Amino acid sequence: MQFKHSQEIDAPADYVFARITNFKKFENHSGPTGFSFKRQGRLPVRIGTRWDISVPVRGRPRRFSAELSEHTPPRTLSYKSASLKYEGVMSLTVKPVSDTSCRLDIQVVAKSRSFATSLVFNTIRLARRRINKRMNAEMKKFAKRLAAEYRTTPTKTPT
Image (tube, rainbow, N blue to C red; front, top):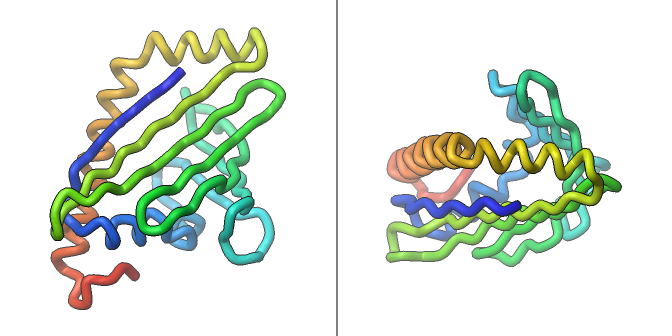
């Protein structure tokens, strides 16, 4: 199963990469979505750092862990996750379009390792159109928020 999305952002690539690698902000996020992102251990973030992640799906929290597998500033960031039931990789790539804009490409690839998980993945495939629509809407909001933050930041560096 694979999902891809590209979104143009009116902010420089270095700024966007710095924002998506602001791990402390993700870890401290507590919004109404029910999403949580907790780092395992206290060491600084580096290749191999793991997070416990909880995402609400159909009213139930789905928990898994993810490991930082690639971190190549200022362009690429990848996470991998694996269990007895599935394996997956999420890659984020920031590509400059001009001095003041860039494109954020996101790719999620997941493979099932069990019959039960393949049934869940088939359900997700059936909902692909709705998932892509929601992802597009969320990415547009994210792009607008990043562009607005960039325009209002006096020093043009992320916080």
